[in-house]
Image (cartoon, rainbow, N blue to C red; front, side, top):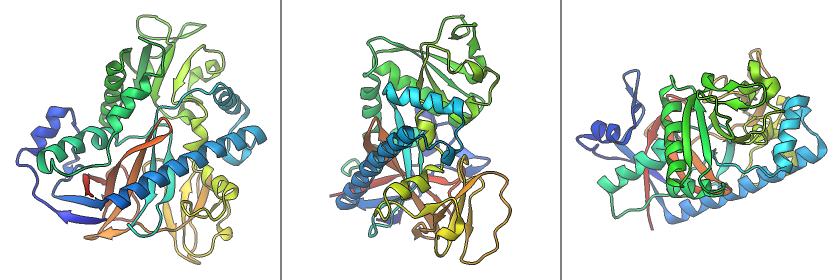
Length: 368
């Protein structure tokens, strides 16, 4: 694994915009970068893929243990949310996709930092943008990227010609692009689809409905479960005859409080980091993470014996595993799962050691 400087395509902005990638630059600063690329060998790709599959299997086992034992208090899950989780888990409601954030330097085993299992973004750039970049700049190389094909295939588990509604906060350009891309993969699988802003989802007294007052049978929502549960319509979540994508059991995995439970269930696993609700349980430096935080918000690094600022929300502690640094950039591997299989990855990097929503996306390739 290494970072290599390279020459951007002369028309890279136009090339990206022609694909529908409208947020390659954020507030005048590059989000997408192709003046560099990350290079891997086949062994490293195999290791990331195997670790992702192993971690996903551990996560599914953890969900089963939590549900069977009713360990919801450990995740701050109330009775209403627990009912939704249990119903979706016992009904085996299928998952679509997720992104594991891994620390990996090419020598130590990949280790899980967190699982963005409910509303992961950076999907379009990982699936589409970096694939077209590869075809333009290194068509003889390879890339760990079967994301698009896997998404189309995954939608085919639904009954033929299903109607799927897609809801997101469409005033957020990243959420809009991600949702519209997933809608397109659903159409390619032979289904029908309707896009809505999350605020346009209505309630008829019996069903959730769209702007034409048609009942919504299946709803993909790029909107976190913990936010849904605070909405005025949350009381109807238990009653509506609606299948959700992602299903409610995913709220267990998208909650960082799953990390201490994973360490409890599988202590010492080489792909996990020590984690706890109590700082003193972990020796050395730790990372404090809000249970429901996103995109690095509220994450702080606490060196050994450093005083800890007050937390305004429930947090967990995870042993510090520094991201590898290349050219003064901290590199994070985002490994994508579709269904229950690892299918690709994307690299995010930042001058800071905490990855945030403004951290740059850098394409990758590998050669045998």
